[in-house]
Amino acid sequence: MKAQHPNAIAEELARFEGTWRQVSCEADGVTDPPDEFGSAPITTFAGNTYVVTLADGTIVLEGTFTLDPAQRPKAVDWTDTCGTDKEKTFPAIYAFEGNHLIFCAADEGMERPKEFRTRVGDTLRVHERLA
Image (cartoon, rainbow, N blue to C red):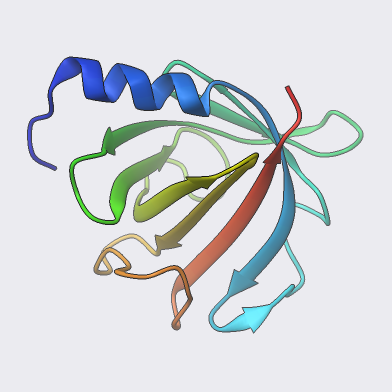
C-alpha cells in the first residue's frame, strides 16, 4: 500500500476502535454460508490489532491490520497472527455506513476486491458496533 498522511490513518483507526458483532456474511457468492466463526462472532479492535471471539468468549482469531484510506474503495490488509491462517495477509476493502463496518477480503495472493460483493475466494462481512 502507498504511504499515507498519518492523521488520515489515525482518524480511520479511531473509527475501527471498539467492539463489533458480525450481522451478516457472504463467501464465494453465497449468502450466510456456514461460518467457521459461528453465527455472530465479536470482533474487538484496539489500535491496529483485532481479536475475534465466539459467544462463549473463546478467542478464534487475532491479528494486525494496515489501512489505506486514500484508495477508493478504502483498503485494508488483515494479517492473522494465530489460527489456521497464521501469518497470511488478506487484501480487502472497507466502508463505514452508520453503525456498520463492511469489509470484503480476498484470499491471500488474490487481487484486492474492487466492490462489496464476493467472487470465489472472497468473503464479505458486515459488523454492527456494540461499543
